[in-house]
Length: 228
Image (cartoon, rainbow, N blue to C red; front, side, top):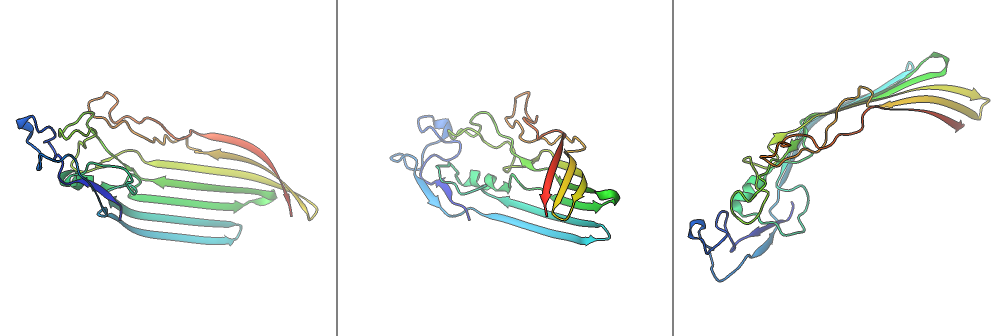
């Protein structure tokens, strides 16, 4: 459970200013905001995990992992600062965690080829993760900006992630104690666009557009000396 900090005798949503009748008034006109620390946060994680592993035999090995999961909660971590979450806002706070991805796949393998060559690869895939659309102003008039556009936090889905890394090596043995390895590596071999954060303020022409991306394809060559 995560700490929840809420207002009890302060302003209710949409009733911030007691001097404006159209916005209502405080429950207790003699008191300001009352901050209460309560242990009411809830996180839920459900998953089905499948794995397969083939040990090195006949010059090749393979590992496969798949996870089907769902992760929801009120907060991403413990709140150690003041947060205005009256009951209506607290209900909207419950949504998918920012790292929630319905599908995750990892596949890795290694092959020993003739003439001292070796090929290895790692493939990773993650389905779309959530993002949270917010108003750029105080939509519900509770004096707090950043109100959620949707019924719950993190109701929208962004972009998936796919990356294939590969390596080819050539080994040279010098006696029984020394081995030289020449290799070439490629990261994000398919040059897939792995976007990261998204501009989430409604009304802007940038709304829904990614603000960054992970590295494009990278290639490097190297030499390694192994002492056996």
